[in-house]
Length: 364
Image (cartoon, rainbow, N blue to C red; front, side, top):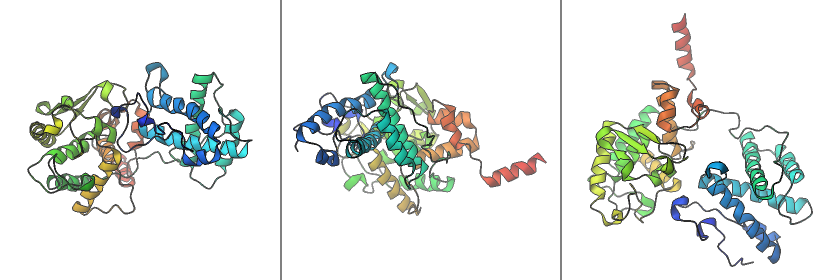
């Protein structure tokens, strides 16, 4: 059926582009759900579901501070809770909204014995937990409790794929030869060679220093930059997690690249009415998909194989955390990566076995 309403959150009234990530779609009623529901039930579910997703995005993480989850987390939570709702309808008597504690327990009982990773089970349970908190907020329902204790990290608390030190140097070097002006470029922003532009050199080098998340690349502003002091100053209201004002150090080389790019961008009309530091050739903010394609293209230019690796933009961030911890300490990594909790930083405290052997030799 046709709902005759926008079926993605970003197209609904009241949502501006800065709230969302480029190419990130948050679907309200999914196709397999619409196939199951009657026309009346689909309309009712739409009106029930939209406030839930809106709550997650705007305030779900910390309602008292009106701090929401990232669009990525909302998208993934929406997908997992939609599968749960459909399972309830198919297995527990037909359409109903909202589900209850017994529905959630029965679903997790089934998920617990599926042939999937512990991480998948943990993420499913985490999504149901967010669902439950919204039901408590909206309908004053009791929060759901589960007897399971799955970890969304799957028992591996270390960082995912990251760039080694030699790979970081190769990526930095490749960025010098991979640049394009804001007005020209190939499809998907994979660039034409133009060594006179500092746009992508500044973007990549700043990310290599600051471990910028994709959303931070998209949100980055000229006002953050103090190249003369070798700093980025990220205000709380513009930081990815909205958890504090952050001061991040950058190298002299990166500071020079940023200074050159800021001067260059002032000559392009696309940036006339915005403080955004980097925009795609279509005038949009960068998102994770575009950035991952750029990184993979850099890897190909640098001769870095990524066929059996999770070479997303986060590989840059994880490399900052891993090497900063080894070169300095967890406190330096926590500050550079802008972690609120040291528990998040602890995943980088995985000393390689050869270093541990050396430490034992030194200890006598």
